[in-house]
Length: 455
Image (tube, rainbow, N blue to C red):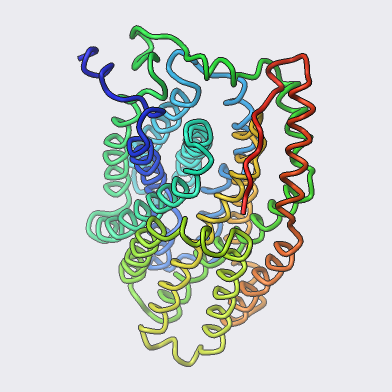
């Protein structure tokens, strides 16, 4: 068995193997997203839960994602290098999520013990956030820069497809068997996803298991940071560059629209229009599946054709137009095709937006602290998602559903204004200056390779 596993190619040696792994791991994350962002909120809406309860569950269960900046430095500082720089953390995060789903399924009458159920959901989210940071760090480490747009397309496509399949499947199990069985299904599915990273090495010569033969690769040893001072000092140098600050703001504002949309649409369709929660979950599942497939095959081409900033701007303009049109057409909401078209379009546009946004974030990271810096962008975006979901209760007390969609469009409009101020070329020049400084440093751990041009 050990001989067979050692004969498998390492991720650094095979492009399609590493694409398959990050796609599968992002699909595993999609289980958590589909369950907690769509299926369970729709189920709660069908149980006549209040807007505050639904928004509070989404916000609480996703709050750990906004704390990912705390996990990035830990992963940069510590790892069991004989098993790879990121792989031990991938296994840790996925195993913790598996245990969390098991705990959720074991809670008797979860609607009667909803606080305890929400706490268990937060535990799942915490470990899934660990998993996310580890995967992103692994992608930055093992994918060459010219492969990163394609990698992001596959990663986000996998996440959306995983979320869509979870949403559709959970809608049926929730209606047929209830929350407990649904959580057990999530548990079993996550166990299957655990197998692939368990058997694949990052680089040749590393260990498959802690007790196996193998040693840390020279590449992993070279990238290791030996002190918190190095990590914090390097991060501070790069995160306060103008492009870093502005991209973080765009990530946060778009996150608000993401969370607000996912919180308000079940309310509109289920409570206002009388849909069943399963009908909305099925719509979200189909929309997510379509968006994921389109994202996998088109994300990198948008970057090639239009560039990063222009693609992001066009996508936000389309999202704004769709939200305003939807808000103005409230008299047509009773026609199912109206809701279906808007949800499908929004899923598609925001999936493409996120693929390009985080491909941009990955490209402008500085190599010595790339995982931590990227985790910061992701954490800020997820803080925005939690904020957007939590805003539903206060907004609903002041505005109509149509007006909430106008607020959605306003956040996107502000995002466009901020995005227009980002100067990628100036940022890259700043990174090159930092590279020159560190190449002249006496401390090899503070050195990085030259920055590539970003369109």
